[in-house]
Length: 338
Image (cartoon, rainbow, N blue to C red; front, side):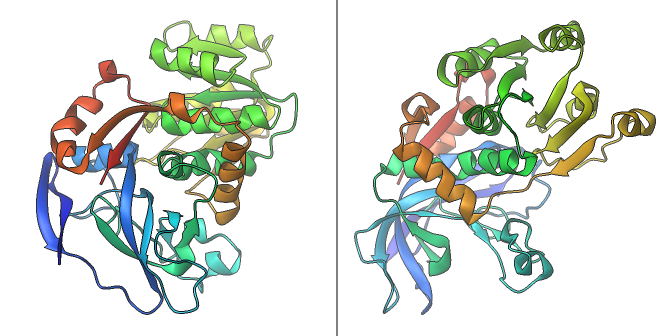
């Protein structure tokens, strides 16, 4: 039995191939993939700027589908709608023993370290497959990127009334802004694109928006009466922006780097110590974060219809993806149907 598979053979080269349907191991679930969310990681892979990847690679880690086959004794049955937690952790390393599988020392992320879900079928260890009861497949394919934002917000331990700045209002920044707002933060979004700022204001309830430019620092100072922010999130994927963000953290504040870039990040040590800044890295998400996203979706707190801006079939992705990467396309989340 064969299936369609979309392969990124090299930067800028997407090829639709026929490959055998995988045979599942005893502890694996064979999933009929139905939806795949396209994210910034996939675009970095296409550009050739993803630091943890070797080609060729099947992209796709924001996955939803239906169970085709499940292990004996599993609580999953053929036909069940499911989503995938794509961070294949080892369960035994120091990070996993600390209940931090999101930064497992031996992590294998679907679509990055190993082939992902831009295919009609995928076999995944059953521990990383969860039922998607009460939500649609389109919504299930959006859980992962939202969980990254939810995890970053949980890392920051935001309390009601704190001033929060999200730098970079792409999908991950939107997720951070959404969950910061749900935690009671007073949220400001900063981006160079007005359409993204409009989205944060209109659909997320952002309290303030600020456009990137020569007057950025003064605008942020005005918003906070010169105090700047209790918590700053960077979701830009831009080293210079990440460095600039240190200056937006108020005294006693916290800076959370969600972005990962193939570069060194530097900052002023006197300013860092003067403000007693807390610096946090935030990587991936944990099962608790996935649960939080699902509960928020079921409660109607996530504007999933507004987030889902573009769609294509698996056969159309090679042609559609380059266009989705252009700012004028206005992509928030593109969903691929398989």
